[in-house]
Image (cartoon, rainbow, N blue to C red; front, side, top):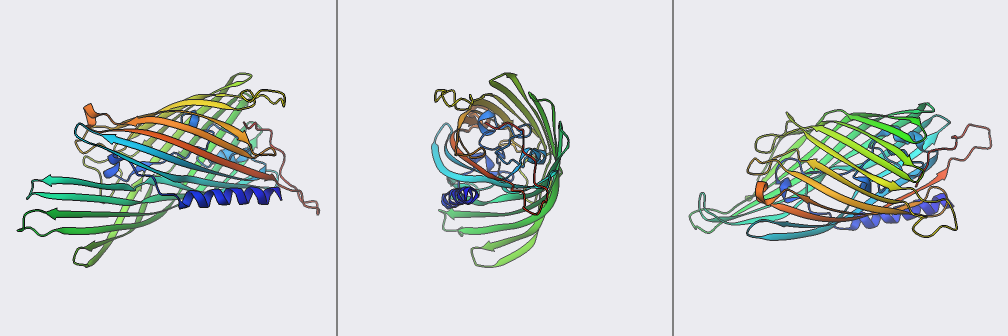
Length: 414
């Protein structure tokens, strides 16, 4: 019954999130494939987006498949993120708001040694609200409207095991698919020119793989690393013109080789310090609509501190909560329209509440940050995000026929 209640609550949460409007992608993402979406759970996001070293007995994370080995229950994790963006330059400003479900994860232990996981992740969010530019003079006075929608998803099918009490390893077979739809409309004010419109749709898919490791040399230290192989997604591009004619052609988009490494250190009995670095090798990536000047490699780094709660029913509200603060900085894999590099930073904070039992968790977090700046990019965006993560699980029952069940996990969870 507890498992059914957990499934029902998470199911309702996912339905509500899926029914909400998708968030508007950055105005900077009119070039390239869009915006890279964080795969961190509700615990990792307020810690600067850290994922790969956060072994957890409650939350499922597939960014590093080796983390699955910490789970001894049938478990589910989902995260919802709401957002408010404000973009401005020297002459105008615009605001956007919306919400998105970046990922949902599930895991199940099989026997004493293996844990299997599956997830659905938004890897690139390509949607963008309509952009309208008025009174462009070339080739004649006109307005230009551009709109894009779509996402690139990854479905990891993962397995992990504890090769040693201090060593966990994991790997995943990744299925990719996506849909990108762009619409452009030109309205001329000169009667000698005909207005035009076209709609372009890319349907793409592919497969790849990832691998990860988690080393815990002492109960207070965890070191994680993850590798994801380059994958080229292929498919069909369909172009519809204002006259209603259709053409189709092959299309491909390359997603980069990616490396991540990070560590958690419990420096005090009630204080964890975490850090992570990620490198995405976009340079040389191919695409039928590459950004001007091509792609470039990018580095993302982040970290934070976590106050561990007291396991004492008599403790105060503050001391029974896990409190987290963090910061992350990242570059973008494309330049802006003038050829300048783009960077972003975010400060974050969050906490957690128990939902009953040992595995139920509700995570809450806030993020505030800035992307680009007006001096270098002639455009800047301020962003405020709030998020909720839900996790639940049930112990893997030992069958009455004597078949082995999973062993209890000793991995802490906050």
